[in-house]
Length: 419
Image (cartoon, rainbow, N blue to C red; front, side, top):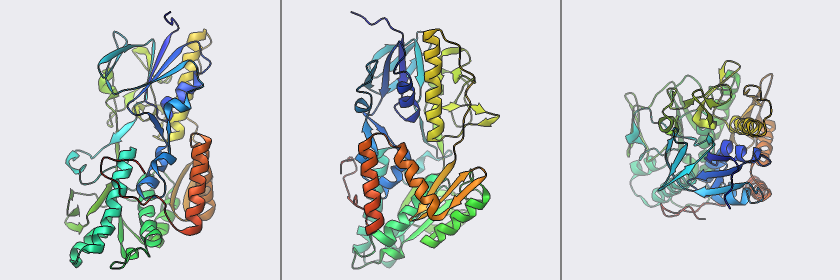
């Protein structure tokens, strides 16, 4: 027999999409959650996979496992090709899937500000494949530096440039410095990994622009204590296999990592709706399209304001949007009153810089150093999906803290994400 319950289709199993699916667990509907991968990824810790602190399985959980007890939800692995909003169909690979309510949460991708040719030279960090590729590049740089007899080549191999001074760039630069100065320092004979140069480049006047200026200053000081060189107010003008250019200044380096910008998935183009300059779909206060109330856009894919300010592309914001949309859809299906317009509640911002170094902004309360670092760890373990992931990450961190070692220092083939 066919299931005549209203069909809610959710595109994307990130923080926003997965939270929306869970919020509809008791709603009188059937849910199809579609993602091109079979796992939910905890992106905030992806940089730790890239720097060999964690393995991919520590921060990724199969979607089917997460939703196995939710009887009204099914999971479909496939790649979305487009949306026919007039026929209410989603095009997934070679099939069409009809919907009554659609939730688009397809996330964001890297933005190279018109220089897409830089992507091969300067990979970004959004997927497990990105993280394992970066880990491979980092570890291979040390291996190649160990064998080369050319001092100039060795210097270039041991120079690492991170472009972008937001949380990802700051955390990545600090983690690379720790990898070189702590985890690898005694592993080589011809080179001294502690002499590796890590350069963090930010086009703007300060790091962590979303944080108060006092915390940005603290972050710079903490990075310098780790040995990271910080270049502020210097946009990158060229990326190549030989290095980067900051205006007329050229820096030879063989490993360049991109953390400078993101742009939304093609969802706004699929929907034929208004979008902002980063490609995010413009939605109303109920997170739906103004001319198609059955279509919701949430997470990094959505351009939405709350209390007159743009909602940031953070995991807590995505989860709040997912919960809200679940409530709106449930209210429609049950004939309840429509919830009040979406309002983002900022719970604070955290960024870790290195061992016992972090910054935390909670409005009137600002924390730095060890206290912020412990709080950062507690929050991230709590946000992980599943008891297994929480235990694995906590144990890995405790071991790394006591031993100064990183257990995932494997150089895998470019196509492999298996540890």
